Length: 159
Image (tube, rainbow, N blue to C red):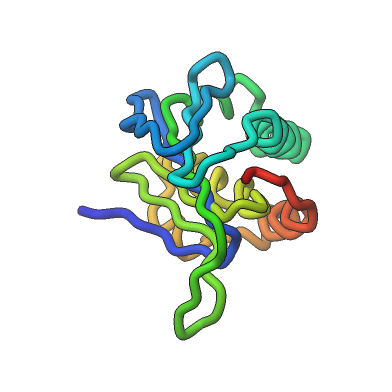
């Protein structure tokens, strides 16, 4: 069964779980969290410092909101691949700024990084066995919507 989630936030690719996602080199790449997370882009100039800052900010906010402990969150995100793409695609519903594919353990986000926390929430829910995360079950009640919106207000210059 293919589990894919289409999100309306900037595109960043993240893969989740203990297994490691494939590590394409792309035109630019970097290891994050001591090599536990892989980030890459087919465009040159991936800003690894900004990528590390965005990941750290997302984990810190998730921990502060009580989503999980730092150790639990880092374990859930171990092995993910984050692909950064320039620009935003559009479909009938408007901008498509993020995508999460649990089967490939990959998240794709746009170069401003604003969708990273949203996609990491899908990764977290996947690690917790939540079915139908793409439909954002109880995200309002859990406070995920607010976390997502607040994180998305900051731009991370990833490319």
